[in-house]
Image (cartoon, rainbow over all chains, first blue to last red; front, side, top):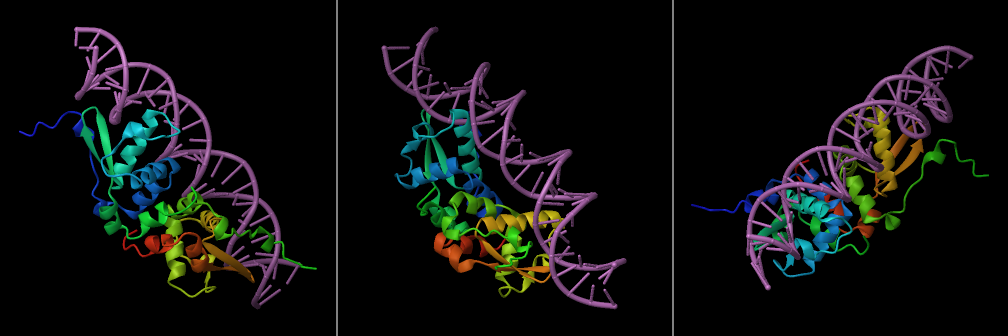
Length: 110
Length: 110
DNA sequence: CACACTGTACGACGAGGATCGAACACATGG
DNA sequence: CCATGTGTTCGATCCTCGTCGTACAGTGTG
């Protein structure tokens, strides 16, 4: 009987393979979201909770950005107690959009 | 003496090397603009005038999109009589954003 | 010159999205 | 149980951007 927590029900992940290029590019075209992705790329999977990112926005806005990244198939999230841990879906996203993530994350500026 | 035509004065090209990743991604995150780029990629340089593209927008809007692509260092334009010819700046843009253009243009859908 | 054609400039409009504050849900530790 | 910490949701606001119609500027042709 499942017993998914009410919390987890808000966690809808998009399959990167079914994400449109439009959605992917829109998700990547925001500096706050790119900073989240860079941060994730620089750390091990499941080691960064949403609140541990140093972002120039309130937590409400940050929550919005995490949702957008989830909908674009760029990140995966998992609840660990009161915290929500994150993982960059590098391999899956690369399979759907070869070279795109590397082109964005490997860029020096921005 | 120069004698640049008044027409050509409206042609300000951005150097791809000085374009920010933000600007590049914003330019790429529009379906009409991507369709222009795909069209250019499929034809020889300087063979396509602005009016020869089959776009789902009016010419005023199309003109705006060409200006955005120019500002992002993605295309180069040259006046040929009454027409304005276009060229995809593939090499220069690739040097500034390695892999980005390929990732976008080589994608099947969109 | 008059006319057609190509493309830009300008002003206006509407939709979408980034942002915030406040309220809420859940987990955890005293 | 109460307080604290984490994160989401909701409504409101603001502002950018895509879009259009119209007017305009050059070019070329009859």
